[in-house]
Length: 553
Image 1 (cartoon, one colour):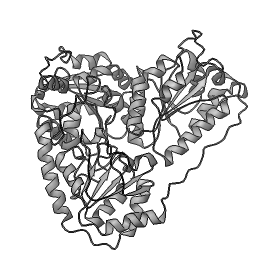
Image 2 (cartoon, one colour):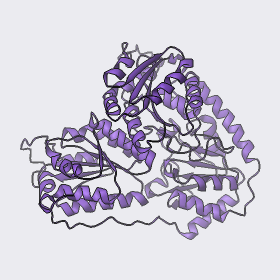
Image 3 (spheres, one colour):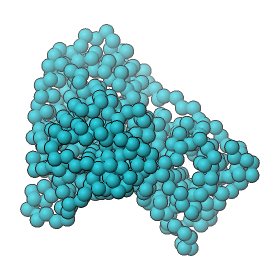
Image 4 (cartoon, one colour):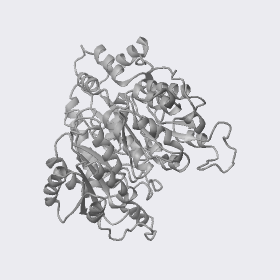
């Protein structure tokens, strides 16, 4: 326990984290954040040290996605903070609660350009452009108050990353121990009149359809109940994958990017969208034009008319609103032939998925058949994920597939798998990535080895950035900088303290996975693939400029 003489701004920060239930922090110590480490060392918070701040950010991001609790990172000033910026932008795009704490220039030295170690022209302003907000505090008590406010707001608002900047003199200054405690926050309740209008529209619907995004991940039971009452097919975004079990007869899977699902969305006489912004990253270049009544449900007012304007805008939490609508419609007879309509769309969507992802279906089938049902998959922004796992690995619960949908960054899978495993230590976790993406964060294998995490890392090796190569060829551009010379990935696994295997055939993959799950530490399993059967665009999507680059695809 900290003594009175050791009470500093850092103690106020760590105390506020503990007060909000933080159990794990990811970070790397540096010259300017050492007082935070003094306090962390004497606390019961577990500290996990990545090999690069970006890896720590991805690990914390996945920890949050899997656990439903915020992820927390500590960096030093300057390069440590800019290193984590891509992970923060990923969390921003996918609405992940991530708190990044860093030191900053002493009070009065902002924008001073005095050559201070790690000096950034305006660190807070730079981060404010990437995070939901960046807050620079002037006292230990204010630092604690910002943490309490952040956690309280995440419970009732759209969760996005926040940066807390602690001027070095505030971080190290004496603290009298006085600080506010954690804050209570109540669920957002929409007005009875708005709910009644939405219920009336749904009650009269003949061909309703529901779209669920990541904002509905905690509304599983309510979403299933409402869908069954309406007889409404349910499509999800990738972030909402599994909110309604994909084995359910009304489920269309995470298929909002597929042409047949988009046609069904536009044809519905009432479209209910909960917790999704219907973004380009979900729809793959298509702009939806629903012909029926549109009901939007979201905790973020700015989302209610984004991309597709709402006829009925319901400002509220998805679980609360969907539960209230189900209660209002509990006496409604299900719509006619809802299951048959869903089956027709599902069959057409499966055909569309095969047209672009046939090359990736076999590996998904092998993995889903040999791994436990509750396996968590950390996917990179690679064809094996968006053409493979999304359509061909049905999941019956949310938070089982963690994937950087909006920012589409490479290098996510390996550190994300570490964060996911720390969040769910009793469940199997795998990383699934291409060869190019693995090389962006391969050093994090050392962390998995250090922590003795049984972690299969499956590297689908197509010797480069396959999608970008395909896009170049489609534009009659000679392929440039998209080929990667042979890398011995199993040897990399061993070099970082784990294991490594190479499988010559998918039939060998189940045995390799069994060995990996029984090992203490990570196992890199390299699978050589021919990606020539895949394509760079979804069926029904109009031609667009290159959607991805080697840092994301």
